[in-house]
Every structure is written in C-alpha cells, then in structure tokens.
Length: 201
Ligand code: IDP
Ligand code: MG
Image (cartoon, rainbow, N blue to C red; front, side, top):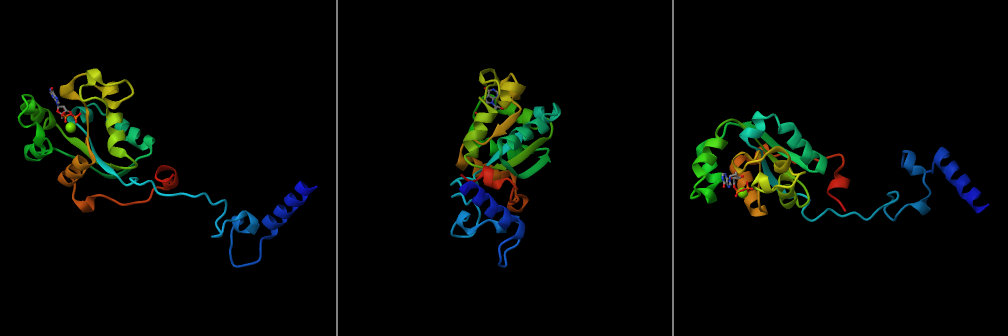
C-alpha cells in the first residue's frame, strides 16, 4: 500500500512537475530525494589530489616507422588519461643532449643519439592521476627483454637499443622534460566529458 502511494506520488511529480522555476526531467523529483543544494542523488565527490599530474611520453623513431603511434596513444586513452599536447618532429642533437643529459657519459650515448635522430618522433603530454608512475608501468622495463608482456615495450620490442617509447621517470623529470619539448601555449587545458569518472573519487 505504502509502495503504491510512493509510486503514485513519483509518477505524478514526474509527469506534472513541481511548481517553481526549475525546469527539466530531474526537477520533478520530490524534495525529500534531493540533498541540501538541490542536486539530485548527490554523491560526495572530490578531485583526486594529483589528477592534473602530467608526464612526457614519446614514440621513438622505431615506433613511428613501425606505425605504432596509434596503438600507443590508444593505450593511454583507454587507461583514462587526457592528452594535453602532441607534436611530431625531427629532433635535434641539441635537444636530445639536454633530454638525455644524465646519460652523456654512458658508452651507448652516441648510438642513442643516432637512434633518436634516425627519423621523426611523436612527443606527447598526458595528464591524469598518478600518471608518472602509471605510465612507467605501462611502458615497462627499459630493457624490453625484461619487460613484462602487456607493457608497451614488452609487447612491441625486444632490444634496449630499440625500445619504442619514452616516459618520464619522476614528477620532477616530467616537469623538466615538458618544458624542454613544449612551449606553455602548446599545452591545452580542456575538460573531458568523462572527467567525473577519471579525475574524481
Ligand atoms: P628509460 O628510457 O627506461 O627511462 P634510461 O636509463 O633513462 O631508460 O635510458 C634512456 C634510453 O637510453 C633507453 O630508453 C634506451 O633507449 C637507451 N639505453 C639505455 N640503456 C641502454 C643500453 O645499455 N644500450 C643501448 N641503449 C640504452
Ligand atoms: Mg629515463
């Protein structure tokens, strides 16, 4: 009996609406089902603290040559991250020497420069919760022979000298690399329509 009464009340209010200025289907829901601010079925949401963390990801020349750009972008999109900058370029040795400044004394450094300048790269900035750590996990071990299946390097490469992709290894490193590769105005602040699923908890 009570159920029938509630159903009847809801039916009437949905179909005939509540008096007042508010419009739209949900405006007809009884005030007992609203929270104090008038929003319906309000859930307490808060932005994740580092939802706007950014990192630099680059598809290296072998990845571009092998037409892996789309698949690599797709992995970051599917994970729920937001692309905020992207460009394709033939990188200079000057830029690379800054990017890899900590590796200049390594024996493989000359071959690394040769590899990275052998063709265009696609460099991107991605944004999202804990993205530096998560993207390193997605990319996998530096040496593809040790990278797990399911990671980008584990799926698409087998040798450390052709490991397809770069991702910054720390938030500080990410900030340095983003400033090195991108002008501030090349990065877009935009709202994803699924923002409440990807950056709020
Ligand atoms: P990471 O790319 O996983 O951060 P780093 O140690 O920063 O690894 O090295 C940068 C890049 O230098 C690697 O991604 C790889 O392309 C290259 N590299 C690292 N170690 C070797 C090596 O032993 N032989 C040849 N290339 C290497
Ligand atoms: Mg590194």
